[in-house]
Length: 640
Image 1 (cartoon, one colour):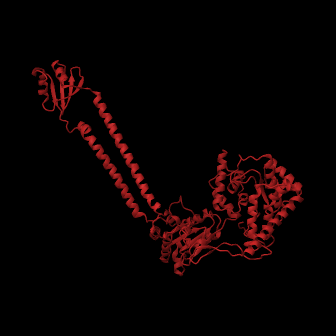
Image 2 (cartoon, rainbow, N blue to C red; image 1 turned 45 degrees about the vertical axis):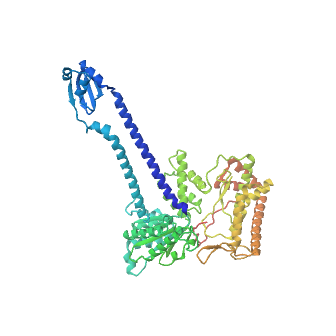
Image 3 (cartoon, rainbow, N blue to C red; image 1 turned 90 degrees about the vertical axis):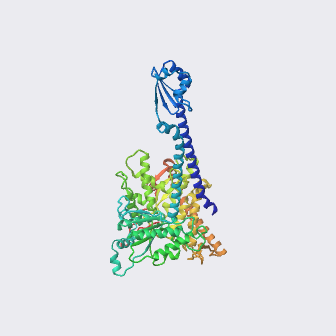
């Protein structure tokens, strides 16, 4: 803690030292330039001795002498000008007489006295060298005092809110519900907030109390911030945005002060919307010991609770917050009267994904063959931010290849890039490794094509992406919210298809199946401990996790005995071995098909869905078809 407190002082000292060094350097440079000019001026006309001036006068070569203080400017007959110095104790005439100049010779010389003691020459030669350092140090002192004043002002404004304000009249930053695709239920819920901000009298007359706080919950990238801005844009009210971490500072009490200032600003601008992003940064369970060991976060949270309780029904200020961790929020923050309206934002379904893609494609020139429905079909589970990234990557690919329009091929490649990373074209496999990879990926693809409840294969490739030497892309026909036990078992067999193919064809195993085994093992354990899909253990939740303590924290808790843990391990092993046996049986009975498909994959390196299904038909296997909805049955879109 002491180390953190010294950092601002060290920074201030460093800034002052840096400025002082610069000031000294500038002063030295000015003195050097002035000295150089003075020397050049002195060396330009070599001065004469007074005796030489007397000799020139005697010879009749001097026509005029101009006296400026102690300086003499001697003008000769040939218009040449010489300089000299007179004696300070006596006048020029007396000095020349003393050097033997007769009076008649002296009378022929015009002597002018130029009183320039306070003229330009005086300032340049006498006063300026003294004034420049004084002026310089006065300017330096002014800068130092200015910085000290700024620091003192910062100390006074330290507790003020750092919220960014979006003006409702600024059309360049205005966002409406038209700019937010999908989340239909969320927009309906928030439509009441918009109506209240526009016409609160309708609600107050009937005795309705509009929610003071709205909590937006959802996975990262689902559009929580965008939806909050859309509410402000629809209602045309000021939108004050800041993150939860901006309240917390090193000094205790600053966060609470900023909360008070923020709510004061909102009340002055009412109707208005306050939006706190990532509220879990300050809204975690109090008294849990989480958050760094000081109570600054807890004081900030307490001040938010007090301010929300202090709202009057007539004050048209709505507090909106966003989080992807609602489970860690303090219960006092979620009770009625505070964040009493909670809006869940799911990942978009296929139709919503297509609408989101079209929104992000508005400023991008697309070629005629682009079909957003196909791209939406290939992106199950993608969030709105992921889809925006897909469109951006597609535009980058098109620009990199000097094309003026984004094609369907660019979009398909961008989906794979966002999902698995860029192609590693420099990662060249040997012929043997290429063959192993081809059989491995075709083992996945063939098992998935032969199993009834497995998803159809959309692409098979042995071009390296990310950490994978190859990949098999399988996607469901429709987004779904529920998965059955049969579908999970098919996924297990499909995941172990590459492992089984390597073992059957090469009588050996490689590290390429390590990720498949990890994914399959995690799925099998979830089936046993979370979903109750074990025949022997039955519908019992055995997932050991954490529970909330009395103080609001989280404590690890062991919920199963050693015997039950061993039984879980046996069940997981049983599921894995059963899936492996099923995959080996399917591949063994279709070994010729596996050989043909693998040889073709080695040759072309990538097979799209259409080409893969043609090969299946040529080898006597019927590809999967999209199931038709029965009469009266509705397929509800969802996420995987």
